[in-house]
Length: 410
Image (tube, rainbow, N blue to C red; front, side):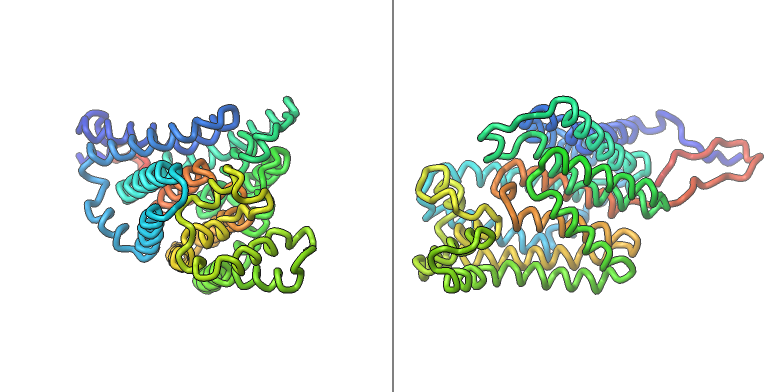
């Protein structure tokens, strides 16, 4: 008689791999979203530990992983563009006027390498039981964030305002991860749950005062509405828009400085300041001042508090035109890659990509190392969802075969 069940200990290494994978996903998408609400430093620890568990699971398993995954990842255009940006940032350390950026660059490069390895060695097909942990973690984090905000009525210090408070960081993490979480629910027909998760996240970000999280969610929602049913066209339009914003931003700053050379409106104050910097930098705009020059310049008092805190300004100021071109290429290729996902999932992923771009565009989170860590967590979530097998109902075996249902393989 044919048996459709799998014994609990047929292969100890496979069982251990599945257990490590479950623990790693739980740590990444449940604990990593809840812990930073109370302690801002936990995300630096949880991401490497969770990613290491995913890698350990890959080493133990021999059935669900493909050795060509890493090669395919390294050969993909978005990763090549990101590697070009990282290479130029490393080269710019030669002429950066500060010593601190070298250490930060090493930490950032190590984080991104670990994220890339974890994403490439994940199972080729994500089980539903693992995939469910993503919306569960987002929902639990949203509820906890709302509860703590209402119960404690936190008062933010000057340090919290400058460096983003733990509640603000948790809100920004939700603004990123809610999109793949909603996609994982919607493609299985759970639209009501997906909508409820989005509303809960919006409320949590509003109450927590997460900087620029609401514009990011609104921007993501607009792109999602445009992409629904036409993801390929939307991904192409979004790729062109993001690349254009990155490349044309200095021209907008120069135009603002020409129109308002002295007293610009409050909304354009940062752009006008950037325009004056471009006018005085000259050819330095092509090469930049070196990785980390903008951040350390503000911290050291060499640049005034009115210095823009947008990622786009930092890329242009630190890495010049070459770095900006690499960033524009990476964003465009990432949008095109996401647009090729399954039709039901791609609009949510495009919305998530837009939300992250808006946060980077407006700042101030994009200049922080913890933001890069959150972005790495979001990249792993994208990979997890894009590899999912989605069914709206569990398969049913005919009665009388004398076997129990197989483990859920979706």
